[in-house]
Length: 236
Image (cartoon, helix red, strand yellow):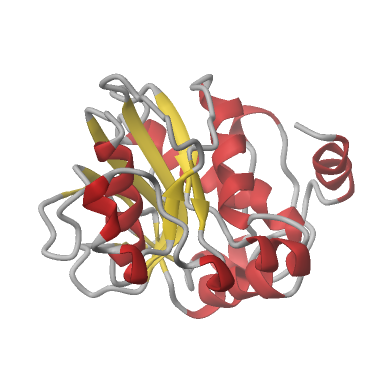
């Protein structure tokens, strides 16, 4: 963890990510949000076992929260209002969900869906990478940057593999290292929101093409109606 991230954790240790009120927390029973927000939040009960029609390159999907109301507003603040500190409570929510659903049991590497260089320069951080690195710290599973997003002005840059060439115009991502070899690694791919599934599919496909045994995906929130959920607090 870099110095900036440590400073953020010191400055914002006890704020509810959804309303900003101060909360008491600490230890293994750390409270991640205030009681007044609890009834407005919708948590999914368990991991969603695929196949989804939208995700044919992802083996298993983990989504702890509904992209709705206060949760949606908090995510928008995290992505667009420079509230970088939100990565910590968001990571803890995801970590609890993954732990409760065995999400770390069958993976070797944690990676993330990257933002573009232009977006990173404007925002100053990569929201999914911050969460992925925190999950790595909490779980002990290694984090690796495996992917890069193709900037709009560099759409035609492709790897040397022939099967990529035909899809170059539509691709948004590449392997960060053209010679990447994953040697049957089991990957957990982290993103912020699950919507159409096209981003997870494309990134998962690249990892599989570079040798991954399979790819699971973890997204903090989704607004899709085809994921089962129950209202209330996440399971302890």
